[in-house]
Length: 311
Image 1 (cartoon, rainbow, N blue to C red):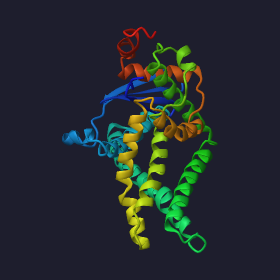
Image 2: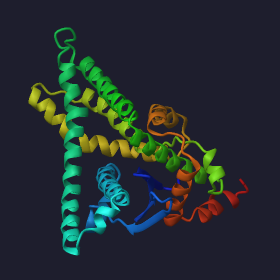
Image 3: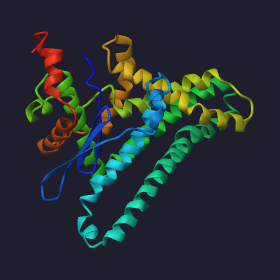
């Protein structure tokens, strides 16, 4: 199965789909209308875009770009539920609001990274350190630290999945996956075909995060330093390396049916049962609109399925 290289994200009452530099956000407004916004996102690398093609380096840029674009598209989708307030603003007030939102977007990305590092990298280390009197082995504590890290991640997903708005977002997340799976399995992109497709996909961001957590265990197991502050510093400094390796594993897993990679993908796919829910047909319609705005799925299927007589 050849990857379509489509990526996406659930937003507020909608879906963002991205292919190469093009992205589209499809949102179902409160009145039931589906609005599609299409644009180009070049990424933070700017004129140094060659960096985004270097293995183990491109993953870091991809991760940061995903966060920036994700927050941008979430802000766009939320705007449809604040229209009455926006209509009351003057042009000057709207310009100020736009500038403020731009700064807030940058601040949100920075704060999100800081919180993620503190909760998923630093906190597990200190929690595992309390076991030193009963478990003197650094390597065993490092493995336990990794298991604590994975446990915190799963607990976090379980807690937020109880929120009503998040449950709907997870349904849209399921619609995103189902659309991509529908295309990559050679089925015409219709509501009926999307409905029967799997809501799990090996290239999902959830799987990426699991690979980050798992690979961090391996690297921290191999790299041992003596002082507490150096151990904290190593955990922060290794994050770009871990992200780069995780991205390559994820990309490879999404482009092959290798049994070893399939096995390594299973924990991430299992966690996706928590981060995706079965969508309704209206959500699927929104996802299809987002896909068709950025990707010619008919040409993809002619090239990869019809020509070989698969379908």
